[in-house]
Length: 255
Image (cartoon, rainbow, N blue to C red):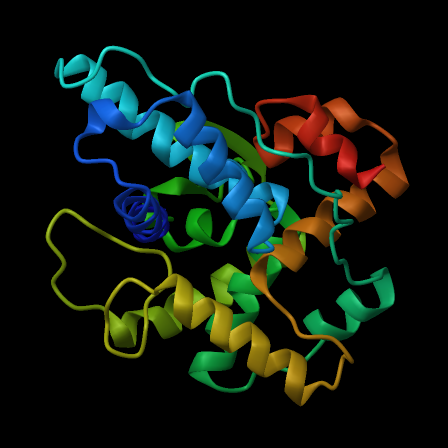
């Protein structure tokens, strides 16, 4: 997010420099609208323009707080709506095929435990990589997850996911190193907490090897969880809570 905001702000600074603005006070509502029009003409979609506006609103809010400007020219501007994309999902047979792969090596045992957990709990990839040993309550078949905005939620730990994790734990002992104040559930082969990039590349590799006919990514497992849950239960509100969505409208895309 920080890298994207930096790129967006750099693009804006280039635009206002060409427009003849010498100071931040020179950026008025007309300049803001011209920049929005330039973004559209360059082919940016609504979602990208919304991100640009978010970065600029934040910048000018700060400039106003520091008394470097008097008005925020971006407050009244709205990004054009972009077409809502349906989430990519695996069907139940594809998911069963993916998770039925035999795990007979240390890395495969770890991978299978990660993928079982992501699918059965509908986890974001960052939620998976941030899990610690103390977040898994085996006796209660529950998992504590810290999601966006540092919000915690308790999720049911499924039978298959629990079995996969219990199989991984003895293997995990080989990779443990001294980590200060941390006890990650999933480790890399360098004994560090597993990274988001590693999870992405491992899942992509599994998809290629099993010839699933689609490019696998971690969010696809989360989408598949939500879609399959909705098919079987029809309870949108419960799925909202399991996914950790603040607004029901975010969950409604699965309908």
